[in-house]
Figure 1: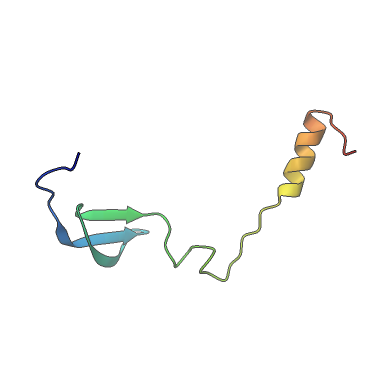
Figure 2: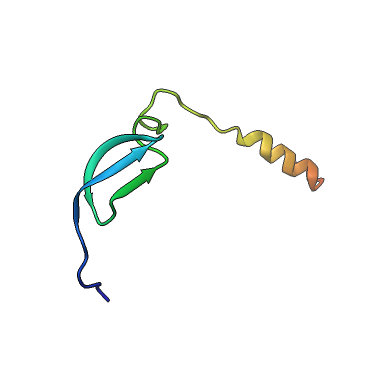
Length: 68
């Protein structure tokens, strides 16, 4: 069911890291974001690589399994 009387705010503030990032249109006056293109691994040059091999080995030793 579609809500009636939705209030559109054309200058909503986008806040990132306690600072105003930009103004956008939204139904909320403030939008707090945790990640943006400034710190997203896809856009930044700092690539974070997950070491899943260590986790697999930890699992195998915990449950006493062998690689056959």
